[in-house]
Image 1 (cartoon, helix red, strand yellow):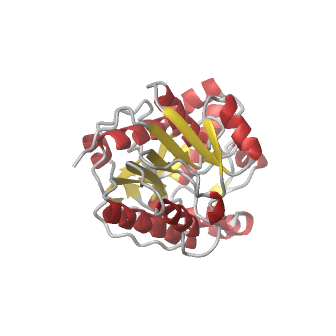
Image 2 (spheres, one colour):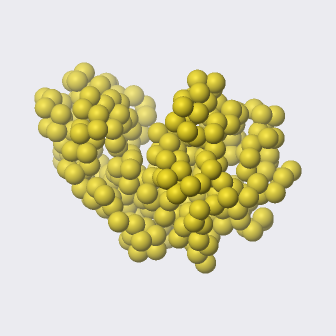
Length: 306
């Protein structure tokens, strides 16, 4: 059942970084009061300067979460899990803190398409069973499970967004391209999906307004490509030399563990549920259009997720 939220009494964004600030600006444009939860004093000052009410707390320190203004809020969970292990202790701490007060009115959380694991390039829908193959993805799936159990126990609608790669201004892999780091030959590169940061923010709004309780939505622009095509497209758009394309042995010797984990998984996301149920109209349905907008906003933007 869809529960409209336009606008909520207040919005709380846990992990108010780039995507959080984009979502905050959209809600502030509708007259909502928006709180952003961040860890550092410097981040809190930056939020205040942007017109977002800062809440300074640490998901790794449960004692700092008691006064987080979650009661009755539209809550966005954007903070990543901890960097190690297979359990999302940060989500555990957050939800435990909510037990002592009135719960949020609605929760929208960003997760990752990595929970599906390697599907050898097959099209994946939300009905396909998760099969995480990295600890990072296992932590994300655990966070999803905690949120869904909390929602059912407390009668709170929870919407999970499984997101592919995110690109946008200041989120392009320009440092890697400039360094000349090699990429896999195109015939070896995995299939991937992406979404522009502005479109992801719009999906987060639509999920709050139209998402079904306990629903999962794949979030992507629907244009799949391989990782090497993405790097080539960014290089071409920025007027940079394309990185050299090599075989697996050379890529493995020069890439981080995180990058290798991306390269070892291949899947395509089915985004029809997002388009149909959330009634999303993408501003940037193609990488070409999205890259042009990125460069118009921030011509020298740097490093982000692939």
